[in-house]
Length: 137
Image (cartoon, rainbow, N blue to C red; front, side):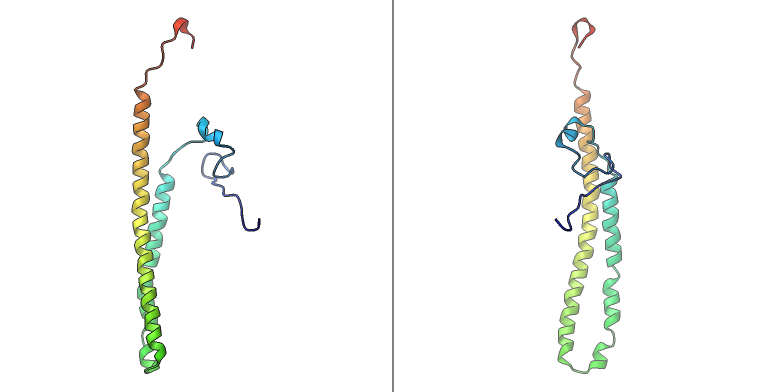
């Protein structure tokens, strides 16, 4: 299949193995099942970065359109150009808002995952190990 490759995550446990691991059993055994909020926080930072990059685009678009009406007289194309510009301005603002909102959601996942980890750990901490007769399991 052309254009299809294996996605690898080198910074994660498992090195250059595909993101799904070598087998489902690896994850069940717990050998590769680890969580870090770093990935979520990096993704949130990237989303904020995109929002920041998109932020000034509307102003740049307005600057690029300055003087067009004066130089073109009353061409019908100006009406179409204004409609296209308005459409792009809406899209730019929607993309900026989506990136900004996504950053907050990604950070929330990191917080909730950490809370879930602590809850699970606390649950295991309450479990008493079985008493063994004769000192052997």
